[in-house]
Image 1 (tube, rainbow, N blue to C red):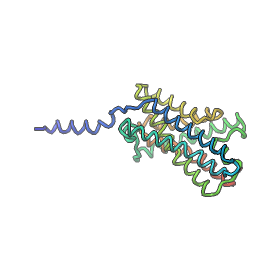
Image 2: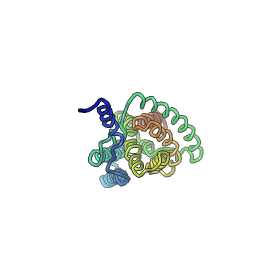
Image 3: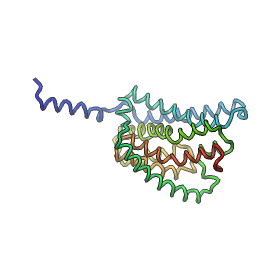
Image 4: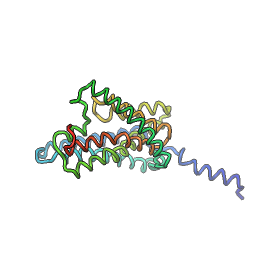
Length: 252
């Protein structure tokens, strides 16, 4: 007959179990997901270059080239956690509690201050003409229809951060933890890889600054929800700038 103490211990172990179960994917999974991202972006570029580029509106190129590779890589990352692990809720520490949202806004506010100051310094160093992100450059030369511009704004602000956090502070973070790296080492390396993986060499130093508060949110809460909210807060102003440039309200 099970005693009350045994029942309590059993219940406690069941609750703790999802936090300690080891997934069967590692750094190779991240490299595979990143390869999917790069190869899909290259394929889209090749298709655009082959099928009379002048016949394809730049809005279509901006939307497809920005959204499809990121979403496809994220879908593969989630599939990896389902097939080789315990699913995203456990493996990626996926959650969206009130505590996550509060922490996300706190680190996001810190990120806005740091990023704004860093962007001012960085723009003065590299010059206005080199200060645009890859997405901004896509919409700088040709106005987009309002619906397409809003779709791009929502992706850069809300959807893109979810995708990137799943890949970098989720899949990559979990892969490094599985290698028994210390938490600060994991934070440092994921921040560097996050910056470098954007494939914008001139902006890498700025992206490092952007990635620090996002990584700190993941580090101190231990959950993906906080880093997602931090990333979304941090992306709001750049996304708004892209929207205003895309519809011609603000110069590139």
